[in-house]
Length: 362
Image (cartoon, rainbow, N blue to C red; front, side, top):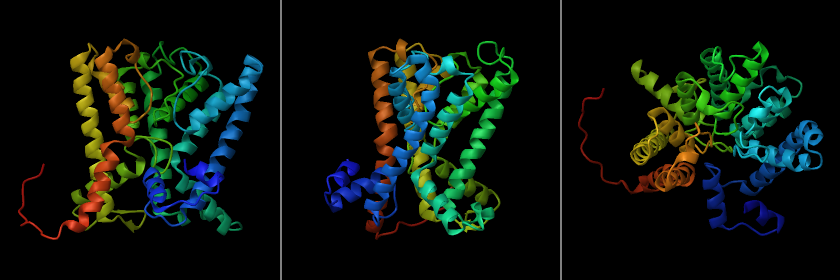
């Protein structure tokens, strides 16, 4: 909508700016028009490059239809939608195709990192064109956390999935070492709310499914196309927890102190997210014969808007499907953002402070 307004040269009012600010989870309304233009331009460039690279595989296989498939898949991967028009088994037919794995993973990661990280990296590169050896050092705290958390989660996830699936004949057990690595890496990337699959999710070991659930819960980074609780949110909570354990006065990351407001918002997001997951899991198990691991996998995938399933979705009855639909809606635009927004707006109204009393924790 904001892009269409800019194309029609319509001036954005305060209501439109507030809507854009909320949609992108921004802290300020300053420079929103320029931000939206950069988002549109950057998105079209990346999706265009992805579509062209896809064509090297899909055009020879599908002919002229391969052009449309390439464009569709590029947009879907970048937007972390996970929808494809190739086959019923997602990208399983291309599990060992390096080009498909690399292009899809790159699009997923770029979309999941978030637009703020893009512009921050470009800013540092431009400002240090001749001295770019320490690009990471000059990034903002947000970008440092998002990049570090994303790289760490993908790497650790890939290693664990590789180890747990190494001898599994239903997934990567009979593949070559190189193919095992690329399939494990892709599984770790796609669970960051992308939704594509190169191996049947129901064939994963329970250990790999558990790792995938954790990765789906975390999701991508703020102001990006991915869902989940977000990397920065989890990093802030973990840092705050360790600061409390070590009896430190305040949580710090990369030499910067994290504000109390950020910690409060992180707690609110995680609590609301886990509440939605737990509630939908109980309801799903009450209305279907799904096993615990399958039900959790399904509801976490829905809450984080991932789209992966251990072949459970098709077997759900009307109530089960309704639960998943509502869960996806809440996970994307429901009480998670609403609770944080309402909390921020009502903060100034807390004029009267109640008495403080210590309680036992843990």
